[in-house]
Figure 1 (tube, rainbow, N blue to C red):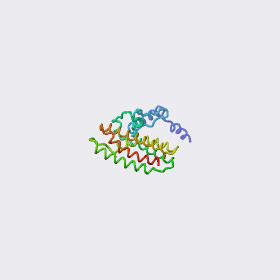
Figure 2: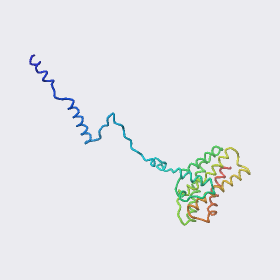
Figure 3: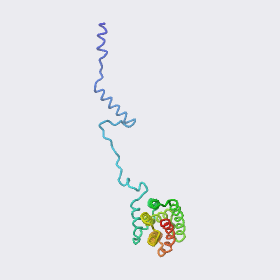
Figure 4: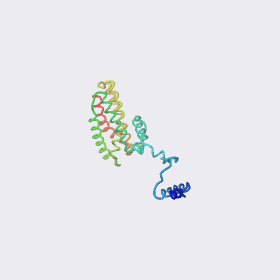
Length: 222
């Protein structure tokens, strides 16, 4: 037993100190930097990447709200000169919104006409597209034609909103419908001649546009 008592202090005695622990931690950090990313410590603050403000604009989504606003103002003010560079941009966000608004206001007036609105829009855009390509020396895309005709549908939405509150089947309603048709066709023809450099041909373009918007007026009045 005396031999075991003498052996115990020697057995538990060790040269491993706190300095060795710190050195081993530093070695592990070094190995972590070599073989992979080091696990962040608790007292380290996370670093966030800076994102430029221009990358957060609506253009990343394909929607330019400035163009939508400029086109809407051009339609609402027929006497305002049209900017051809803006109108050449194919933008279908506004036209889709106005088509849905037209169908919704007709629905509030007790007329379920969504199919007619979409069908007339597609066929009318196809006809105006073919006509403009025959009349103009410069080619125009189908998306551009659909965009212009869709934005110029906004006055018709105003007419259908009035039909929610009172009937348009009368002299007053007929006069209002004719004014709205002239408004839509004049705005559309103004934009087309500005975008396609077709000066002196506005009446020739306004006539087929008036026929198209007349169909929408018939849906609204009757």
